[in-house]
Image (cartoon, rainbow, N blue to C red; front, side, top):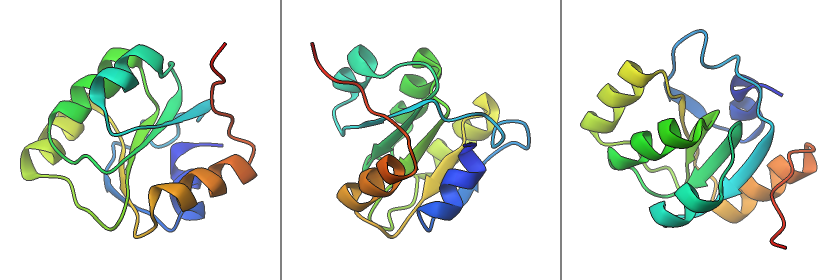
Length: 117
């Protein structure tokens, strides 16, 4: 599944996305609002589900090679976040759904999270 396909399935709108970025494969998923947790535990190719909308989410996504970021609850990214997402080719999806529902839909589509060992 690609980022663009995931956006459709979670009733999302791509609010920042370069053409080549939305075709990235989603190889896993991670849900958290704590940036340090995402930095420590997400993996390259994950789609990140969060309510955060500030510019620091772009740095985290870039650092870990995430496929994209889903911002839940109808929240919209801050203007600086949109600008940095465009510069760094990080897809941003805004959805009216809550994080629990987004994670459930993605899981139902076969996107796996990571189990702690």
